[in-house]
Every structure is written in structure tokens, then in C-alpha cells.
Length: 205
Ligand SMILES: [Zn+2]
Image (cartoon, rainbow, N blue to C red; front, side, top):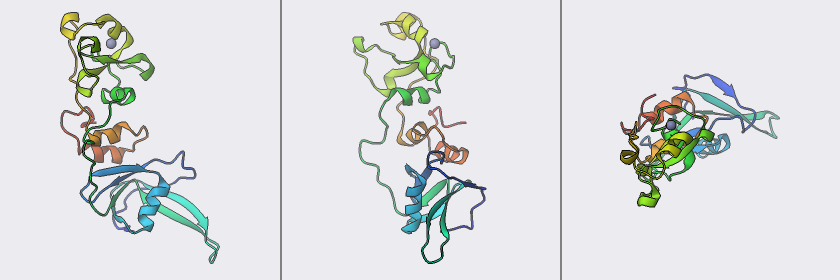
């Protein structure tokens, strides 16, 4: 365990529900997974950790040691680099399209009126309607509010004279890490943002 570059403050997490996820990255800086504290602890215990990259520290209390009678404590940083190179399975360069991920990709902003809405007010809008041969894929969907979706109806943006305010794009794997964690920490966000292509709406804060 390397402590030399730790510069954050220590937060003691008592329950796993309130604890943030730890961002695990490989030796090339490629994100591997979000890990709960217990899993991060296993990386440390098995000697797989190369260094800590996060600015936040989290502590988890373990069991009582029989010999000393003391409770063991484990400390991890918010971003942990582990040994080796993580291979991305072929076909996993992009993440699967879901309603929630789409709304987060588009920052919950309607592509037609430009207003921001709560998730419950939003719809998945097929730019070229499915009934006209449009595909259900990242590059043919945008976030739209209910009234804009209804107004556009079964037409293309050109036919409806409703130009798109932003361009749809396929979400890459690293952006998927941002989209899949609602309680992402500032240092984790900055780390992931630095890996994103420029067209990503999450590449800039
Ligand atoms: Zn709208």
C-alpha cells in the first residue's frame, strides 16, 4: 500500500449503502470497474494495487483480530490503479442503449426545445421513426420532452420542421462509467472526462 501520494481527507464510511464506489483502473489508466469498498479491499489484500490516484480516502472497519483484540481498518483512495492490462471484450467498445443512459448522455435536455426536464418527463425519441425504418440505436435517438415528442409525431425532423439542437452519438465504454454511477465523485469524474472523445457531452464539466 502506498501512502506517499495520498493528499485527500479521510472519510469514515460505516455502511456500504452510503459508501461511494471506488474507480478501479488498470496500469494503462483504462477504467476496469466500479468496486464496492469490500472489493477494493481485496485488491489491496492480494497485492494487486499499484498506486492510489484519487483525492479522497475512505475507511472501512473490518473484524476484530483475535490476537490483539483490535478492530482492523482498511483505507482506500477513490481511484485505485491495479497491476496488469484489462482487456476489453470485443464488441464492448460501446455501451448498450437504455432509456436512463440516453437521458444522462443528453443531460436530460430535450433535443427540440432545449429545456431540461426530470427523467419522468422525458421520452426516447427516434429521429427517423421506427415505422419509417429508423433503427433503435444510439445515433438515431435523442432525449425529448413529452410535448415535443408528441408534436413531432411520426415524422422526420425535416418533415416536422423541428431541427435537432444537438447531435446524437454512440456512448463509448468510458463514458458509460460516468453514466452508470449516480454518485460519482469530483476526482473520479475528472479522471474519466480526460479519457473521453471531444464530441462527448461529458468531456467537459
Ligand atoms: Zn421539448
